[in-house]
Image 1 (cartoon, each protein chain N blue to C red):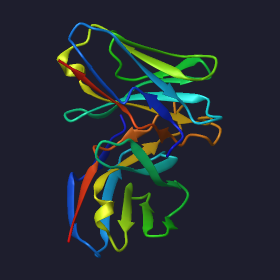
Image 2: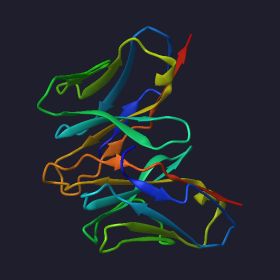
Image 3: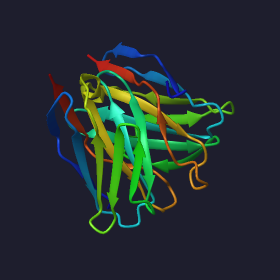
Length: 112
Length: 115
């Protein structure tokens, strides 16, 4: 079945860029998502990219998609302490259910 | 604010009991999804409803059931509760999966503690 892998932790200094990586196995993925979860809160949709795109930029966020390597990344420019959270990568394939497969999440820790 | 609401926010109960979690989707969304999030299992998809009908089933136990009502709100019923059912339960909604409306928006969750 489909699988989505993420590293568990990332620690960065405030003001630096953060890059959170994700790999997936379903080559027919149609949508790929990044969600952010702050402590005690639900998953907040950050951004998504269609599989026919290579890059999407939204203010401090840049999503890069390498379909050949099935690799998705989220870059956060000028990382702030408020960016500390768990970031989930998810993908949806073209099958009938449209149920996303989520990674286990990457805990981003931003220190001063 | 995603527009998805869930009640209650917290729930503490005892083993063997039954609880009902409620979810109201975003205005206009027809599909509702339920997820369980625990430390050891991560985010697990339980079940999906679309316009009142069950559309997909994931890792949902037989002790759990759900339904979606004509006004599109949904309820997740958990019965014969066990300690291991303690988790965060999320509801998400989407507009029209398969017709360009696949993106899911999550509610704030219900934290269930079974003692």
